[in-house]
Image (cartoon, rainbow, N blue to C red; front, side, top):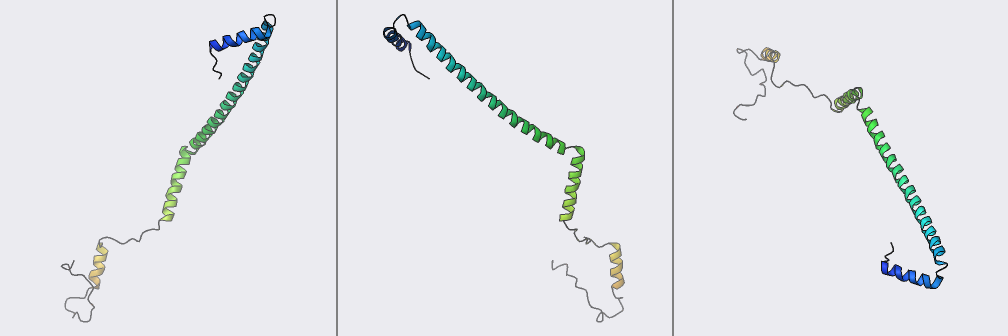
Length: 139
């Protein structure tokens, strides 16, 4: 804090010896030492209180983090995981409407129905409307 070297301390000591005198100098130095001791104790006490406040603040942060982790761990119990997964699945099913079921390829029943609706070969086809069947060469 103070940048005082040995040579400066010698100059201060010589001036104090001349100004105060040799009889009173030991009492003055004792009193200055007591003041310095009081100042150091006060600084040490302040620093200790400051460090204690910092530790309490850190402990509060650590406790909050611990509580957060504990609550997250309670949420991750097997029963909660299963219920949350089932809720997610239910929500997904509710959001996605069921797709219309159209068979990709005709089933034998549809072939049978198609054959039942086709006119016999000896009936003229002018009475029966022709189905819209795309030409295989066109595609």
